[in-house]
Image (cartoon, rainbow, N blue to C red; front, side):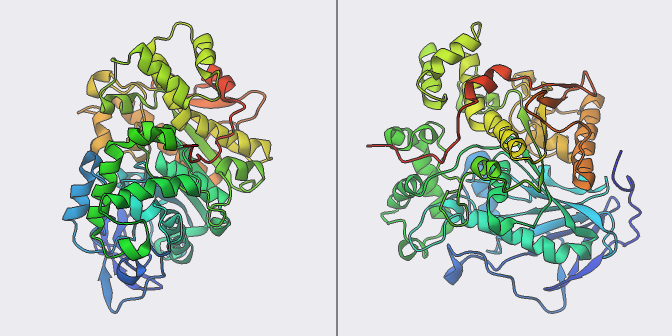
Amino acid sequence: MTVGASEPSGVFGARPEVRVAGGVLSGSGEAGVAVFRGVPFAEPPVGRLRFAAPRPVEGWDGVRSALSYGPPPPQGGHFGMDALARDAAGDDWLTVNVWSPDPSPGAGLPVMVWIQGGAYSIGMSGLPEYDGGRLAQDGVVVVTFNYRVGLEGYGQIEGAPANRGLLDQIAALEWVRDSIRAFGGDPGRVTVFGQSAGAGSVAALLATERAAGLFCRAVAQSVQGTYFTPELAADISAPCAAELGLRPTVADLSGVDPTRLAAASDAVGAKANIWADRWGPVAHRAILFSPVIDGDTLPVTPWQALANGAGRDVEILTGHTRDETRLLAALDGVLGQVTPEHAETALHVFGPGRDAAHRYHEAFPAAGPDDLYELVSSDWLFRMPSLHLAQAQTAAGGRAHVYELTWSAPGMGGALGACHGLDVPLVFGNLDRGQPAALIGESPSPEAEELSARMRDAWTSFAAHGDPGWPAYDTRERLVRLFDIENRESLAAYPEEASRMIWQDHAFAALPLLDH
């Protein structure tokens, strides 16, 4: 079932207008959905506001055109994102985009606010895979937005607040609270949803008091499980600044072109392994930025916060893909080429505890080096962080629903299975646009279209009613929904039981700066 009209009437016309606190916005009508792009939710974080917490946006006179995405924040070069950011004019990095099937103040539609991923180093809301038009046709208001990434958003910089990217996300949610009614949304029925670092952000938002009350439901798809101590974050920021002959301070960095900072971080990421004895597992995966457990905005890790009851009143939907890091192995050039030595290193670096390698070998006796490398990498970075989020929520008396995407996508020769990022085009219904569409293949099959429809239905139903269509997770039966094309209603005990047992006592504490 969909939660609203599947074919919106489009009675708002070709140039719909809404009035928000800042002034009047003029959008566009696209396939029966009103669309408003590039709406500022905070002042540009440049000049005297560089590295500062986001400031409320000032209003504008007359009617502001909301036809184009705002410029993305400066970022690293993975997937060509630096060029996309560099080619966009302007410094109005902090903008939102809204898709609504009924932009009238009394519509009272559920709201879904998306946080994109990108390892906290890249990401922009204007990518075609994040177009919210198809999802909005199912009767929800969809919001996407930009937030600062890389050193701008998450670097530990002396004189600047930590977690600036997370503060941007909170500011965007505050804008939604104050403005979404004008677009037909119900500010009391906001669901925040995200994937990868976006899901890690969702988890962080569950743990911070500043976001309390800004959303009532949360969807965390493939939670990136990395959170840093201030000491580790500072130790990583130092060589990034040193690439430019500077110190990681506001005084030194505030006058530097943001694109130079992003390039400097990329340079450090390319040689991150030389700091492995200090930075630990994140050096092996070149993860330079993550939310910081700073004792202020983010006082404890999400798992600890949920175990303490922080998210008890927020309904959670979380899960992961089956073959999470197979895509990352392909990007690293090691897919199908993992040596036994490489696999043993991965088991030692990423596995929980000193006996992790032994436990993986014992639990997966037929697994070869490629399998073991993928299993422990997936478990450490995405699969177990997602499962533990549900377990912490359930243990504290809250409610969580769990899923696993098990469909092996046919794109790229079918070699990547149910890999990281496959859920994004399926949830948004954008099977033929954006880079993740390559996982689906050139011509999406009817089966892929049907699977996408089922996932959209689950996500929008959860946003509307808190029920995605299967029972909540509990520690006795551990029932989860398996999304595949072969069985429409597959409900089973959590399928990664061996990994669950290996990781059952792991706490996912903030990653420290190692002894050196």
